[in-house]
Length: 202
Image (cartoon, rainbow, N blue to C red):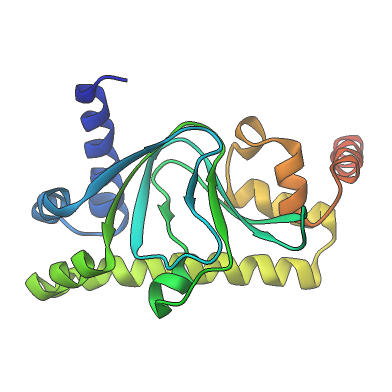
C-alpha cells in the first residue's frame, strides 16, 4: 500500500473512532495526528509480549490481531481479538506500569496508530475533553472482560459461540477456527460439532 492510501486509511479510522464513536471533534483528530505514531506489522509479528510494560494505546487501522496468555510451554489461550477501529493495548499493564502477562500478535498484516501514556497525559493537559477518550477505552475493555467472564460462568459453549459472533461480527471469515475455539475454551473439533448442531437445530 502506498503512503497516500495509508494516510487516507489512518484519517478515516481516526474520524470514525475519535469523532463518531468517542464524541470528540475535528480539532482533537488534528491534535492526535500531531502526536501519534504509525506502526505496520506483518502476519505473526508481535505488538507486545509477556513481561513487557505496555506504554501505548493504539487504534487498529487495518487488519486483525489476537491477545493470548501462555498457560504452559506450548499452551496458548486467546482472550481477545482486535479488528479495524478497535482500541488495542495491554490495558492493565498500561494503567499500572507493571509487566503484562499477555501477548498481542498480528493474525494478518496490520496497520495501527498509537500514542504513548506520556502523550495521552499531554493531551489531557491541553483539554479535559480528552477524558472522554480515556473513559471510552476503560469502559470498552471492562465491559468486554466482564461479558467474557460471565459467559464462561453461565453459558454453554454454544451460547459462548453465539456471544462471540455478536461481539466480533464477521470473525468466522477472518479468524481461524483454531483461534476461535481457544477463545471459547474448547477444542477445534468440539467447535465443529457445536456449529453443526446449531445449524441442524435452526
